[in-house]
Every structure is written in C-alpha cells, then in structure tokens.
Image (cartoon, rainbow, N blue to C red; front, side, top):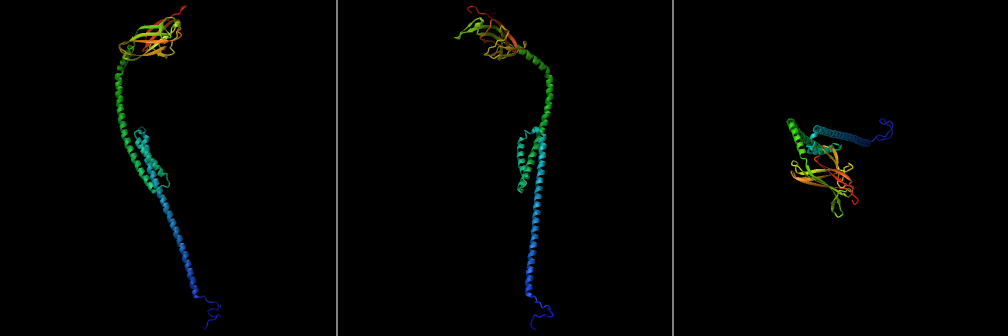
Length: 329
C-alpha cells in the first residue's frame, strides 16, 4: 500500500513520524555534552583535591619547620642556661675566661640571626644546629676550665689561711722585737742629727762693680752671709736639708723674695716659718762648711737672730746687730 497523509489506526492524528537518523544524532550530541560535563566535574574535583593536598603538604611542611625551629630554640636556651650558670657564679674568673667568651659571643650572634629569620631555609637551620653543637662544646670547655680554676682557688685559699696563721704567730713573736727596733731606729735618727760649729753672720754692702764690703750700718747692708760647719759620725752619706730662720728686730721672720720660704715642723718648737732652706750633699764622718746668703734692700737697725735647724732640731743660733749710720754713714 502506498504511503498517505491520512490518519490511520497507527497514526490517528496524522502526525509525521520522527526519523530514526535524527534521533541517533541527537542522542550522540547529548552523550558528548554529558561526557564533557562529567569530565569538567571530574577535573574540578581533581583540581580541588590536588590544591587541598598541596595545602596540606604546605601546612605540614610549615608545622615541621616550626617544630624544627622550636627544637633548635629549646636546645639553644638550654645552652644559654648552662652558660649563665657558669658566668653568673664565677664572675671572679671572667678575666681568665675571656678567650673562650669571645668565641662564644660570635657563635651566639650567628645563631640568633638564623633563629630570628622566619624564612630560614633548611640549610640555615642545619647550620644553626651545627653552631649550637659548637656552642655546647665551648660551654663544656668553660665548665672544665672553671672546675680547674675553682680547684686552684680553693687550694690558694687554703694556703692563704695557713699563711695568715703563720703570719699571726710571727707577728706575735716579733712584736717585742719590733718595739725594740723602733726604739733603736728612733735613737739612731736622733743621733744622726748634725752638730754645728763656727757659726758666723756677716753683713755686706754689695757694690755696683761686683765687689762687696763688710758693714754694720743697717741702711748699707744688702746681704747677710750666714756660715757654719756641720758634721756627724752616724748620719749616712747623702742629701740633707738645712733650714735657716732669721728673725728681725721687729720680731718677724725675714724672708728673701728670691728664695722660697715655708713652714718647718720642729721636734721641740712646733711649726715655725723659715727664711730659706738649702740642701747639702753630706759625706758621713766629715766636716762640711755651709754658706748661705740672705739678701734684702730694707734691713732695719737692731738685732737679727739666726737659728739653724736640721732633722727637726735646732743645731745652731747666733745674733748680728746692725747699727744706725752716722752723719757720714
């Protein structure tokens, strides 16, 4: 029978039947799209899973790095505690340990630099661990050195105690001898004082031509020449100071503006101002002459008292009278 468009029992509405070839193409497209969607979904799931795994690995690595740094810090802090224990209780030994402490300071600076770096590499952390091991070695050497020095100090302390005890015994035994020695030294000191003789006091008028003439007229006197001999058989050879005190008619000590004066502590007369001091080079057991000038432009009329001191004792004394000049004075 020929095909017609009229309705039949199998196609009551008279619709055109779908062709089989079109349905197959549609199914293929749907299948491809479904596969693409499923592939994209799978890739997204894979990509998310991979990112999560990467994040977990990073977190684990960071935690591991933090754990390593914390472990290094713990080792480092333990080393510092050992070091503080040594240096804190042995400050008196710091000078003797200066060489080791300089090297330790260098190690500490390098370790601190690495541990403060938040981005320290594994190589740097490995180096930090090696440096901490070196630090502990240095601290071990310090502990051994401290132990040795402490032992030596204890031995010295024991020896010092014994020496102090022996010194006390000696001081007790020598106390009487020391007193006798001091008395003898005092006797020798007094005995070494010079004796003086032949004291002379001559007033002079100094001329412009350099010549000088002895005179007793006060207004013409420019210089008093004081001379005496000293000697002693006990005094040792060497320098000796001689002090001269010149007291004018007005009771005041006369000084020479060109010669330094000062105050003398005597053994019998207390502190006294002196007119001048001279130092002689004495030879034991010999007699030595001393001549010292006192110059002034304003000598007064009256008596001038001259006193000579040595070793705190007065050894000579004399008086020179200057007169008032006459009409032709």
